[in-house]
Structures are given as C-alpha cells and as structure tokens.
Length: 409
Image (cartoon, rainbow, N blue to C red; front, top):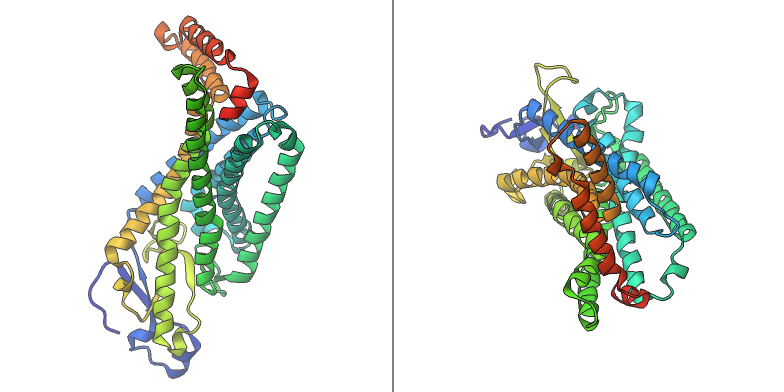
C-alpha cells in the first residue's frame, strides 16, 4: 500500500469478504481510511469536562427553581421549559461528562448510552418546537388559550413526545447501529448501516424541527410587534415589558438555530456526499460500506482508557479521495461546529435565567444571600434598589387589561 505522507490520514486493512478472498491487500481499494484531526487529549478532556460540568450545574439550577417555585397549573407552558432543561441536563451528564471515558465503557453500556444520548438530544429540540407551538396558539386563539392549553394536555403531549423519541432511539440502536469489530465491541467504534440512515435521522429529528421552530418564533415576534403598535394606549416601556414575555422563546430558538444547525446540516451533507462517491465506485468491496457515528482512535503506545486522538464524526473513506467532498478545511470546520453544538446546552439555561423573571429573581435572591454571607460590598446586593425597580415594573404592567395582554401575546 502506498499513500502520500499525511498526518491527518490513517488507513487500515479493509476486512470485507471480497478483500479477504482475493488477498489483494496492496491495492488502495482494500484499505479504509479515516481523516483524523491530531488533537491533544488533555484539551479534549478539559473541553468536555468543563462544558459538561457547566451544563449540569446551570440546568440543575433552573430545574430546582422550577420544581420549587414555578406554578405549572397556571402556566402549563413551563412544563415544556422544564422538559427541555431536563433534556439538556441529561445531555451534559451522558454525552459530555462521560465522553472522555467512553473507550472504557463495557459493551453492555453502549445501548443505554446511545439511546439516552439520542433521546435527550432530540428531546431538547422537540420541546423547543412544542414551546413555539404553545406560544403560537396563545396568539392565534388568545381568548380560548387558557381553556385549550391545560396542564393535563401539556403533560400528555410531553409523555407522548418522550415515548416516540425513546422508540426511535431504540430502533436506531438495535436495527441500524453495529459494532465495527463484533469480536471486540467498543462504544466508540460503531457505525450505521446503511450509512445514509444517520443523515436522514439528522434531518428529520434535528434540522427540520429547528427550522420549524425558527419560522414560528419569527412569525410570533413580528405579529407581537405589529399588535403592540396598534395598541396606542400603552407606552413604549409597557410595550417592551410585554415583548420580553415572548423574547425567551425567540432567543432560545435563535440560540439553538445558531449552535445546532451548522453541524447537523454540514455533517449530513458530508455523509450524503461520501455515500454518493461510494455508490459511484460500483465495486463489490464497497457495496456494504457503512458510516460511523464517531471514531476514537487509540494511541498505539497508550491503553484504550488512556490518551487518544479524537476524530469527530469523520466517516471512513473506502478507496476514494478524502478531499472529494469538503476537503481538509471542511472537516476542520465540521469539527469546530461539533464543539459549538456542545456549547448550546450551556447557553439554554443562561437564556432561561436572564429572560424569565421568575428564574432571574430567584437567582438574584440567592446571590444576595451569598453576597451578604461573604460580606461583599452593599451595592452587590442592595435590596432597596431591586424593590424600587420591581415596584415600577409591576405598576406599568398592571395598567394593562387582560384583553390587551392576550392580544399582544
């Protein structure tokens, strides 16, 4: 086998039946090659542990506040917020914090690991879509909204959503996912067969719901602005206060749109491109080519549970030019898009705390208590200033009647 010297290209013998039968191992067609970004293991450990730890802490704060202080009977839409936050929390625990240690997992852990990871990642996007639909209904049927959207109905929808996502995840793992080496199974050496299934799943479960959420959120934002302008009896400050009530959904959707779509679309297109090139070869040894979820290639001089170099979701290339689709720059871009995707779970709870007063108020109260206990300067926790601001806001918002509020929201 002859290859150009390239530190990013790692090739291994292709173990297909045709290659074994003909014993033609000196042909490039009988080697499978992986693009591998040389990354310091310590950097990967730090990124996933810090990002996962931050995700876990922030989402725990939001969930604690929600369980203790949020009334889901009068505000059933908060159930969607709680489930979206719980999904992000489980992503931080199962995907991010455990990722550096995935090579150490026994094979029987792989099933629950992937099912929970996929279910929670899809669940976060799905509940964001449900939250947008809920806000859309509050605008389209403002007078019947409280009768139509009840705590019981919202709970039924969330249970049905989680059930559907669980079934999809189980089918994806049991039917379409395979260990690369069945004799020595590893949770980090798996592949989809057919490879295009992962691309279709990405589009249906991530890309489409995110685009739908963005379209609904943009529509709500435009309609709310137009409605607030028609109400000439309210001031500019009152208009801003009412717009803040829909800003949470809009900002959460925008954040997911920015952090989720680039990687999901980029990697799905890359898989489709690789599949097209594989099909064009029309060779027997490539007929059953598959694509991995991810490839963690252990270092030759380190144990499996030690240092390793990570190739983020890089599909194997079977006897074709690795630059045929996106090239080296594109693969590096997809790698950083993948990291941006992980950062998305950190931003969601921050947006929840900043844009929703019931969460923000509890965090401020907790900060004030900590600041007092640590004898910090008084300006850091002045109660008088906060009470004045709260009273002023309540007075302005209280001047609106119920029909005006529903017309805007």
